[in-house]
Amino acid sequence: MSIDSSPPETARPKRRMTRILGFAALVLLLLILGIVPRLERRDAAMAQARSVEDEVPIVSTSQVKAAPPSSELLLPGNTQAVTVAAIYARSSGYVSKRLVDIGSKVKAGQLLAVIESPEVDQELAQAKANAQQARAAVEQAKATLQQSEAGLNQAKANLEQAHANQEISRLSYTRWDRLVTRGVVSKQAADERRTDFSAKQAEVAASEANIHTAEVIVAERPGEHFEGKVVRTANSLNAASRTQLTEVQLANKDGRLLPGMYSQVKFNVPATRAVVIIPADTLVVNSQGTRAIVVSPQRTIHYVPIQIGRDFGTSVEVLDGLKAGETVVSNPADTLVEGQKVQMQASASPKE
Image 1 (tube, rainbow, N blue to C red):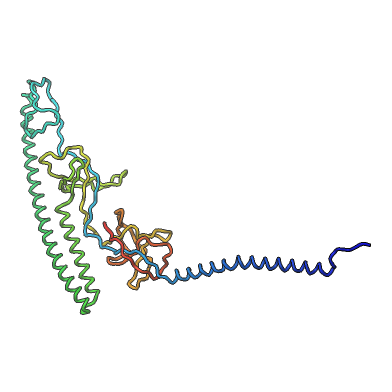
Image 2: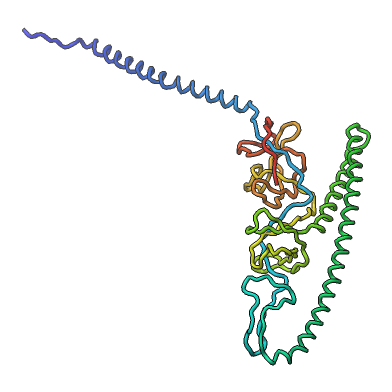
């Protein structure tokens, strides 16, 4: 007798179905375990993004400052003697006495050496004639000095007049500004008085520049400053360096300045137009040009094209596009967009 131990045919489909259902349940469980955390993270990220969009960004700001009526320009220079004389023995003979040496300070007419030569006596008459010409040159120099002093006195008179005009303009502008605050006169009228006051300030700066033109600084004389005056310029630019040769004369009675010293010359340059100063970190430079971000009184930002003048390192000069008193964004982020509302946080004021 044989015994068949194989399961019945009806039990096999049930076991297969059970395995399929178990596998499907396992896959469903894995999907739930993987999708639910991902959905939670997505919802959290979207909520955070919405909160960032709703949050008003905080920006650092700086005030646009009016540039001073004059600025300092520091340029390199060479110290040279006004008059250089080369001394030669113009007659045959020999030096019987030598009274000075290299580096000795000498004066006009001082005896430097004694040369014994009979030819010198023959040239004495010519030397006297040259001396007469030198005296005439001295008289001419004195006349030029008197003329320069007269011009200086006139410049001082112009400066005093400019100061008086400036004070009158300042008082007028102050009165009109108070009237604008009270609503008695229009803001346009006050702006005209302010413009007139700025013009008078420029006139004062120009008058002062005519009296104090240049200051010479020498590294070998630390802490000392030598006042000079521009006497002439080349009125043309060097083709290689694009610079203009300028001569500054200054007194050197005590001999503190030696010919050949390297020096720096500081010029006081009056402003030819009203400009403003902003920190260098407020500039936005990209394919759309050079711009600044201005914050309006309603605390919305606006991109403004500007024209840059001189670069002072930490600050720059703006020739056009901004006005004194406006607020600009410092270190602006790339995410700022036109018309966006912001919260302001004041930063350091610009320095020239």
